[in-house]
Amino acid sequence: MKRATITLNDDLERAVDAYLRDQEARPSLTAVVQTALRQYLSERGYVRPSKRLRIIPASRGAAVRTLASGMIDTLRNDPRNHPTSTKTSSLTIFTG
Image (cartoon, rainbow, N blue to C red; front, side, top):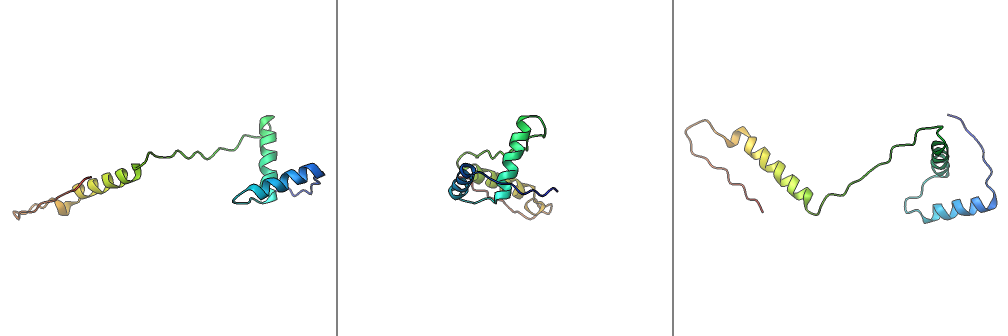
């Protein structure tokens, strides 16, 4: 890793300070400079752009449906819910 000392002129210093102040989770100056340099060099073809984190929100209630579906599958596949003896047993699954 290469270490470097940089000098920011007054307008860049103000802009960076304002940017850092506006961030809820404040990144380090090093992270900001590395990100800016990576973007600058990737736009010119010198480095590959970093992969972006893409978060795709699920529809409202999807997690509950997925969780319920998984629980139902688990109950259905559990051998304890499928006795091989002659005893009578039942499994009741409530779905909403």
